[in-house]
Length: 138
Image (cartoon, rainbow, N blue to C red; front, side, top):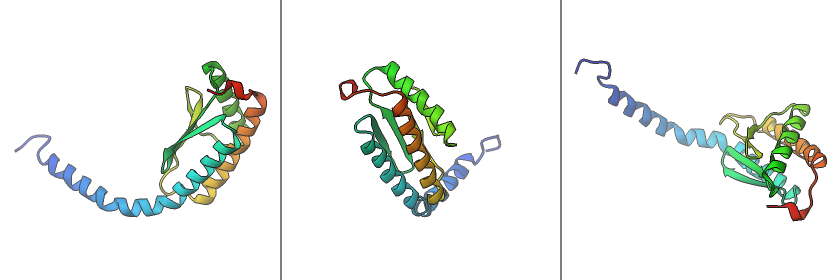
């Protein structure tokens, strides 16, 4: 074979095999931060008294505001993003009214913990700006 893709399938298989071989080391590297992220996200959910629902696995976590009115969820998400900027942290905005956190595999758990502390403070600020009672939970 003499063309652009000659032997490309062999290279792809070699790259895939090398990636699979590296996965156990990457998982060991990521586990402390993933465990911390899970713990802190569940703490945020518990502290919200049902106003925040957290989801995810490993280092890919997200949360959605549980207001039954989509416009109010968006209003709260906007207030949260504004509060995040004030606290010098910026999780990924989810347009339906929530956020995601996806740190890299090699994140320093101490830095992640500080970011999550700032997110918790931003959530408190946002909940104070956009209050709702339990009847509004979706």
